[in-house]
Length: 166
Image 1: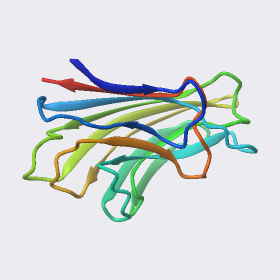
Image 2: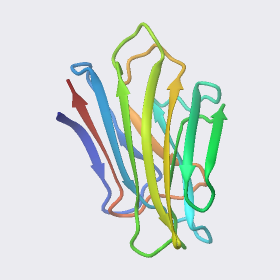
Image 3: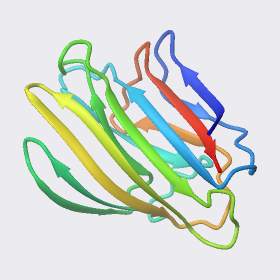
């Protein structure tokens, strides 16, 4: 496993991003540790996108979640892979985490599939989401970006880290 790049915030930012991802590995491992400043909300939904492509219909997510509600969800036309993180009224000092594995990220002969786990502590509930999805593109992944869908910003200490594996 080799560190490709990371962004660790010392202030606020509307995105977390790692670019210039080369094709020298078999898989990508993307780690997220984040919290937003969205007022009047305990959590913020964020989208992980590849190569700045936020086109609805290019992403399809399927996941199972456990927490205050348990069940399955199917999310198409989302414009990115889903990640939930704490927001301003969430439990003090808590950050959400997300781990994504993208096999064959540099291949140009098929769509990109991922599997992931996302955990967030919201109030008195620990929510864990397990899932996977597809990016409907044959392009090699050369950039990953995390963006809140509610217009908020990530706070200091939030980070995204990308590793190459294999």
